[in-house]
Structure formats: C-alpha cells, structure tokens
Length: 366
Ligand code: PMP
Image (cartoon, rainbow, N blue to C red; front, side):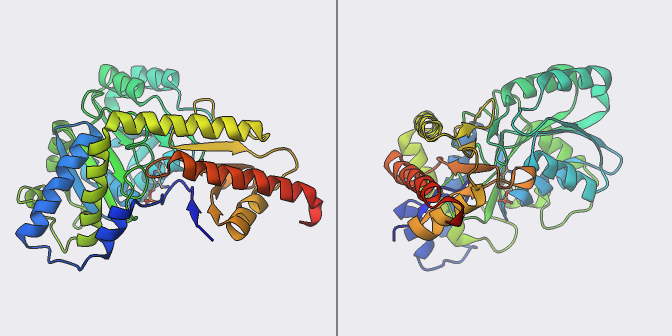
C-alpha cells in the first residue's frame, strides 16, 4: 500500500533528498562538507529572505526555540509571549524553564494573536520587555498569525527583539525576515523544507547577534557565539549531522529552482483545494485565518476524529494528524506544504472521503 504522509511534519521527501540521506557518510572537517554547508546557509538566506546570519543547529525545531531563549535572554530580563495554541505556550514553557519572567497574552484556539492586545501592552510597558516571542503558523490550530503587523508594532512601540517561531511557516507562507524587521526567526528541516527531522535554523538580525554576545545566561552546546565562529569557516562547532546537511542542500536547491514565491503560491493553491474539498465533505474549517501550511477542520457532527485518523492510516495508508490538547478528537489536521503536490493531496482527500463514508455506513460499530 502506498503511504501518503499529510502530517504537519514530517512531510514527504523528494527523491533527491532521500538519495542524499542514503549516500555514504562523509567527514565533517573537510572542504567537501564546508562546500555543502555554505550552500545550505546561502539557500536558507534565500528562503528566510535575509542577507543576515543564519545558523544551523543539530536538533529539531524546539532546540532552535530554546537556543533563542538562552542566547537572547539573561537572568532578570522579561519577555512577552503571544500565544494562541500549543506552540505559543511552548515559548512560555521554555522561558519558565530558565526562570525568565514572561507575560503571556493568550488568545483562544482558532483565533490569531491579537494585534490590539499587543499594542496596548506595548504602549503600557513595552520598554520593559527584552523580547517578544510569537508564532507564525500555530500548527496546533492551523492559524496564520499576522507576523508582519506584529513585528511592526513591536518595532514602533518598544525596544524589544521580535522572535518568531517559523517552524511550520518557512517555505509555506510568505515570510520576509529582513524586511519585516524580525530579529530572530526559528525553523526546522522537516516541514516546508522537505528534509528529515533533525535540523533547526535561526535567522538572526544584527541586534539579535549583539544581544547574544552580551547575554550572560549559561549555555554550551547551543551557544550562538560558538556557532558564529565555526560558521565563518563554513563549519559547525561539533560533529555535524552530515547526512541531514547534505539532504538539506538538495531540498534547498529544489526550492531555489522553483522560486520561493512560486512555492508560496503552490502551497496556497493546495490549501484552497484542501479547504474546498473538506468543506464539501461536511468538515468546518477551524481557524478564522487559516494558514497555507496545513488545514485544520472540525469533523462532521457525530464523527469520531480519532477513529478517522486511525482508519485512514490502517486501511488507506494515509497519515494525517488529529487535534492536540483541548482539540483532541475534535479536529483533524491535513498538511499540504513542501513536496506534497496536488495529486498526492487529492489521494489523501479521496481517502478521507471514503473513510468518512465507511464509518458512517458501519454506524457506531465500525
Ligand atoms: N513550533 C511549531 C509551530 C511547530 O509546528 C513545531 C513542530 N510541530 C515546533 C515548534 C516544534 O518543533 P519540533 O517538534 O521539531 O521540535
């Protein structure tokens, strides 16, 4: 049975990426590796839309988030977090783990982070925040946050760094890291970047680099200063995950060949197709501002979302995701970023339609 992977990470891999992962491993302290590494860095600058520093970290997206916290926030600094779901809350949890005081502005799942609430907080006490942490695409709800607007408000009303989680949005949603004045953007290999999980990336402004240099929080493995030093020689500080880096070079060259604007447009078309099809089948699109990276939808009344996700995988080889936290058994999440093309997506959506019919036909006994 063909496996169709429509989860919001990992996403399916293009053949050239799979081939790169299968190649004999090379040593990392070689010019061969340095060449691949510098291709990856310039490819990432292209995708993040920045000429500034991009660091490559071994680890998944959360490692990049944690690295931003320990490199930008010193003991005694305060942070503002905009949260509208599990991944906004993750910022708050990481800050809490390092005893950094954080005020959290929470919006209800399905809603975007509110610019109005941000503005009144910044007008009241913007100067006290070292950084504002927020999320571009909130993968737990499928919400697209107004990152451009949020960054502008931060810039105009505070001296805080704008730190965005772009794990689910990079190479799926338009993101202009440099133009929008984002100081730190974090992403990961396994979503729009079409690679296996295991790499995180941070795009850092001059202001963020300055903050990292003067930050006094204890850190070792994820120290931006060490990464910057090695990066100058197109190296990573410790043993590099060479196969993942080589695979990343492949997927970035595919993105470059297609053109990032075309990737965004294609992903938006996939999203429109998924929303139309799921609505036709009786699902309700959950977010008010849905992202192009993934579609989240409330299942038709009476249908068990958990059962749908399980049967799809067992009977049709189609893997989608259910809801997290309070949305467990209420929504399904279907991703359409990265290598998932329209015909691949159509197969998944056809299987969803078939499975809903099977469950309904078999009633509660299915
Ligand atoms: N932020 C967002 C928006 C995500 O979707 C994810 C992964 N689902 C993460 C952070 C965490 O990334 P990882 O699981 O790669 O650590």
